[in-house]
Length: 72
Image 1: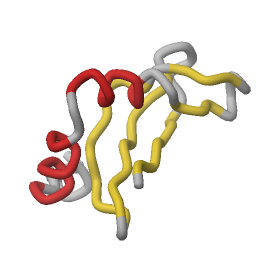
Image 2 (image 1 turned 135 degrees about the vertical axis):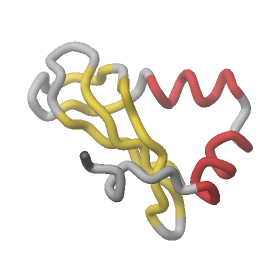
Image 3 (image 1 turned 180 degrees about the horizontal axis):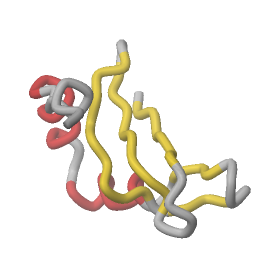
């Protein structure tokens, strides 16, 4: 199991949840996938600290490859 890698960052999650729900949905649907060479939706993501902001790390809804979205 990879529990250490998937540990929830409560401070990152708090920052994520502080963003209005409609804006979070837009951010989830606006992630660049280098494999698809297109803007895609991220799924199965975790929210992580990426000072000074946060990052969503998950998979591309189209191809399943790893993608990330940094949010300032």
